Length: 374
Image (cartoon, rainbow, N blue to C red):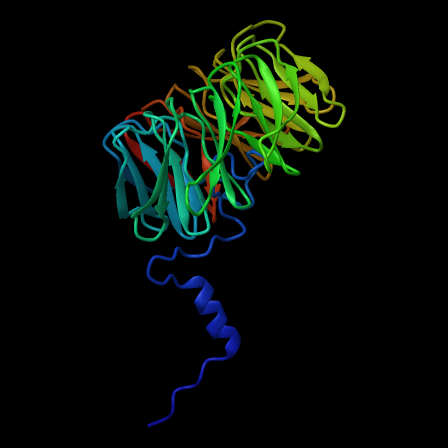
């Protein structure tokens, strides 16, 4: 009998990283989408590619509305559903890996995956940390208001907003409270993180920078309107829409508003969070349109009309923009011109945002289905 070859040290090390052991999640890959908007700066830009004409690979019936946007990490899809569940699905085939019960129900809070744990907030105000491999609870942390914000992992801590009016920071491994920063209204949006500072656009009409190390305020700036969207950070600027029908650019170095954009013909609120790529700020509006604005000047570049509100936040993949609409369609638009190059009719409204990782696009629907394309 021929002796079996002994694997090299390099092969053994690779196996140790890629093969999950008990209680250990598969390592995240560089082209994953491990949190809301894909990265801590909330840019909405994918690091993977998709076919020119994506095809539906699988559908999972979650049973109730899926407003939570998915996370893709280590070959798994993590997504919350309204009846009170955090689901882990196999990215390749859509089979259920595990279900974690969330008695408070999951609204718009989207999972974040880091260090072998999945974090998500619920509508009763609890932040959950769950083992990514087994679906077992690691810890919980209670705020005093519902959570629609999505968690963001910054080093050894997790940041999340709550309707109790605070931005909270807790230890990522234990859930121990580290600090909380008080605002003058609910913290609905997700904090964007860059250079040790968390930026949040609040329901109290203020845009704030908060030090991640200790929760100290760096600055605040009046937005002039209620803001439900989360800011995107690119090139030293923050971009977000408001309920006063404006899109703002904030110069983070000068700590002042660089420009304000308002569509000249239609004044409707912006609830969708922006994606920023190719010098363009792209976001959906309640005027049933997707808008693209020049990132430097604030000049409107193009709009694309759907048949209902666009509350889904766009994801940019190469030269295409993928975004859902409450008209039940998932659209792919040309980033340069705003023309439709592909669409899929899901039937139910798509208010969740597309997650794009590992060559796949995943989005949930209010009719309870999770779709995967590739």
